Structure formats: structure tokens, C-alpha cells
Image (cartoon, rainbow, N blue to C red; front, side):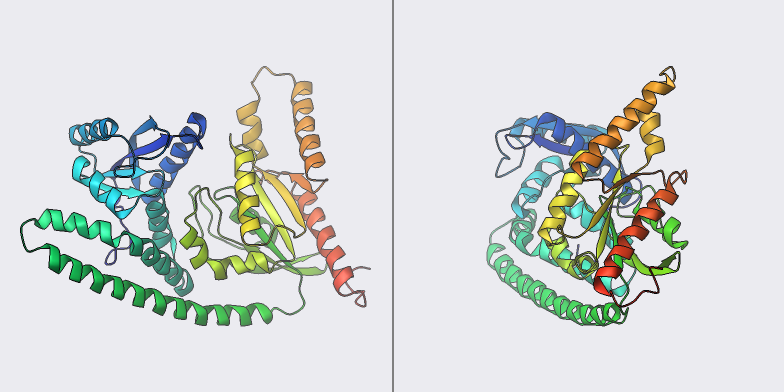
Length: 396
């Protein structure tokens, strides 16, 4: 992992493993595995099978039970699978114990997300953030990994040197973490100065679950070319553009997407990127209304905003991909009046729950974009009036 940040090679085949336990239902476990398969695809691996097991809690040694692990090992051997991905975090010793049985590279969800972030990182800031998160992920797992290496080497006399080497590696990793944190502090200072230099503009930030269409909306509103594709974490770096609606200027930022079970060390490493959200005046929460679990995704975003203390800001919820929602929801023979009623009930429900701060659009089809612009403009104007009541140029 230290030498090669990209742990997944293109065209690798993978099997996924998840647990159904007291805090995770069978339906949730399946949903998480579907998302894990999308993560694997984003990283360049092809999922050929998923395994689920019901246990009260994960096995401390191998995460799944002995019988299930042997079943996975048999499938891996028969199909020549190169990668086993677990949906929850594994300890170093668990990884070692599992690899000893399955005879294939084993990673967990956090490692997979880190791999994607490493591939996507382009700027010095993003690369440093990812590298820091990788070392923080590695540090508590060194002991288990070294035990694995000792067993591979085998024999009398290997234990002492192994323990000496692990202490050396721990010191190297801790020193590297300290160095990367200092480097990030310097980058953060530069970023802070850049944000301060933006003057008195109202700042608006797009937030949301990953792959909900934030970058597409950014391109529509700012008429810029921000990278967007149908993959998770298409962009890691915050992109900020000056936007002017009806002679009213403001700054619009596209931020990294959130996801379930986002590794805590990754959140900490990306603190400076998330500062763009914390320091924003208005949040535009983009939701993929066509996703079967969009309500759960809303919950994940709200929880993440709470965690970074950004949940009290003025917010407009943008329900995107209405074209896909209609395609997935409406049968061909459904009467037009019924379709209208279903969409009206959907809007009324969310307008009631979010106190009217909603808009339903399709960024891909350019549907209802003018209403979106109007709502954003209204919120921006209101904030300017409060913050700079003596300036009338924007509000005449």
C-alpha cells in the first residue's frame, strides 16, 4: 500500500462479502453490497458474486463464520477470483486470517474508497489528503499484517526481528503522518487566504451524496466545464466559480460527495475541503430522486453535515433526475392524470417536510432550471439584504 496507492488493477474480478446483524437488516445489507459493487466498478474491478451471512456480530478473527469463509475460499479457487472485498472495516489480523484461507487479496470498504480517492486525486492538496488518510488507515493494521508476514516466513528466529521491524515501521508511519499533517496545515493556510480574498460575495455550496448530479448542476448554473461522470467520487477537489444571476453575483462551489460508512480518517484528512461547506452561506443539497434509497441518502448527508457542524445553514433541497424517476416509476399504460397526481403528492410531501425549500429538476434534460435559478437568486438576495443593508445596487 505504501509503494502503490492504487491497490486495484483494471479488469480484476471480485467477490463481495457483507453481514446481516442486529444493527443491519437483510435489506440494508443488500443495498450496501449493491453500493459496494458500484464502488468496485469505479475502482476498475468486476464483481462476479456476493456473499451474505447472518450473524449476531462480526467474528473477531475472520469477520464471517468459518463455514462461510470456506465457502468463499472454494468459490475464489474455482473461479480464479483475484480480490475479496468486505463491506465493513477489517482489522489487520482479520485481513491476515482471511487471506490465509481464501488465498486472495482481501480489502475492506474503507480501503476501496481510499483506492478510488487515490486514483481521483489530481491536486497537491487532494493527493496529500489521500496519502494522510492511507497512512492513518494503515497504522493500526501494521501488527496484524506483520503477524501474517511472520507466518509466511515461518521458522524459529523470525519473531524477534519481526517485532523490531514493526516498531521501525510504526515510527516511519507516525513520522510520515506528522509530516503530511504539517504539509496540509500549510496548504490549509493558503486555501484560507484564498477564501478570504473572495471578498464580500455570498458563498453557495453544492452538497449531497456521491453521484447525484452536483457537477452537472454546477456546469448548468455556472456555464463552466466541471468534470462529471456516472461514477462515485467523480471529483475530489472543490471547484468554485463566480456566478451572476440578474446582475447579482455570488460564488458557487462544487464539493466532494458524501457516502455511507465514509472512513473517519478520510473525513478528518479532507477537513480543508469540507471547510468550503462549513464556510458557505447557503447549501444546495442535491438529491437523486430516482435512487431507490434516496431517503437514506438524505439521512447520510444530514448526519455528515451535523458531524462537520454545517447543518444549521440556509438550505435548498434540489431533487434531481426527475426524468429517471418518472421512467422508473410510471408504467407506459398509466394515465396522465395519475402521473400528475403522483408527482404532485411527492412535491407536497417534501415541501411540507422541508418547509417549502425544495425544487424538482432534471439537470440532464434541463427541466425546471429556471425555477432553480429563481429560488437560488431569492436566497442570495435575502442574505445580501441582511448582511449589507446599505448596498442597494443588487436589489433594485
